[in-house]
Image: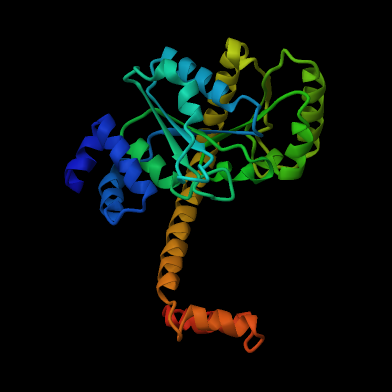
Length: 318
């Protein structure tokens, strides 16, 4: 399939074309630049919601319930589930798609798992590109579910319009939230598995911490919703809170600001990736390998080595 044809089919929502485009994104294909150029004019319409939280809090179950709620309201939905990488194949473990089988035959739902490829945060480096592909395909709502790696999970806030942080009773999540910094990035909290002992205590702790914490957006105080996603309890309220937050973003101008920040970070990530790629090609005796040996032996300090390498790349650090 030629790239212009692929772009046209993605815009039409063709499932095979979508899968192909995201695979090219994950693999860092040479066609990626042309694909992004073709899709760029058709992006910026989808609403992006991120779900994050420690492993075991019920992210997949909650995402599944929100998909059901969105479809009941006539919205088309794409789910991007960033799974842990297999240590043997580097591929995604696909656990989230297994949990979302009820939507597998729904033409208004597209579900894709992506491996995090060893990325230290909860998201793959390719996630922003994948979001652009899904946005250009015309989905009304894109749900991003992260790996769930505890204190590295704040990264989702840079990719989503609305960030939902899930906690569960008895898991120490409220304390971890304070340590990880997710109190600053959460737009909505959900205490899932609220039918368990300790749910009210977790609710009280989160309320206290939210009340004490300063946030960049002082006009929005993150609401806390009690849910039992496996039984669809509290999901309608969660949906309403997400809707309220999006309305707030649009009214305050914060939506535009967030999306510009997201675009800036995406451009910066591409530049850094290009630089890493070029550095990888500078491995001869006059390049990176020789500089690394000199630094390791104490012949040269790392700053002067970095300046030499920057000059090889055509940049000046001073």
